[in-house]
Image (tube, rainbow, N blue to C red; front, side):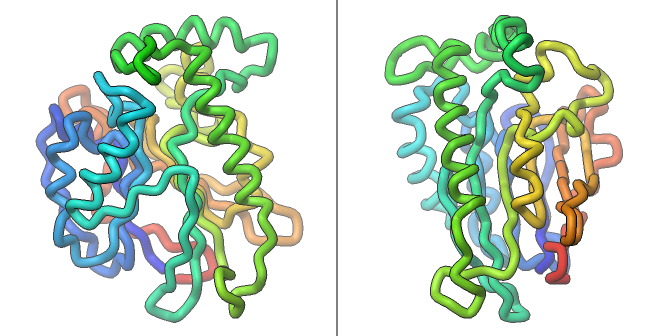
Length: 267
């Protein structure tokens, strides 16, 4: 199975015309597509199924509790399947089953451990101010965001450890693909900024979960990554970020919108 991945298109400000990649069986939207949600209409009538996880900017100026229902309705209007703390199994054209596990994941600020959490949470204030979001009517604070993130982390760990009944059984699968907006590892940090307290607003320390997937797709960082994480006795997990970023800042240099990403073992 070959996938096309878009994230961080920021179509609320950027000029980009998404086109289907020849040979793709599925389009994955990894979040931060359009803070205003207007550009989601561009994916209506896409020639292959479209699934999406939200990004942080999908909630700019919105409420995190109410916003999910509104975003689901907007996506459904255009045939986009939004998944949040959900998994679904899709069958490739070759008849093989792929489990897609999706959540925005948010920041838990644990990237640098307990000792670095307080500084990381203070550094997040800048990004939260830009979002101007609320949580059930209250100002979205680092503490509230961490609570949301831990719920995502607990769900993700539980789902990835769920017993596979076998690919031939109902609900079974051959391969697992994780989709998160936030990055699962410090290895995905933007090389322009290195490792600083603010990096914990972009990357989580989910390295222990990565080997439970065959492919992990993420966005949020305005750069590209494609690296392998070793798994004893198994093929490595591939981690891919295919973010476009802000064209006006030169972040889209090297972005290949037609790149095909093969689910390992299911090419």
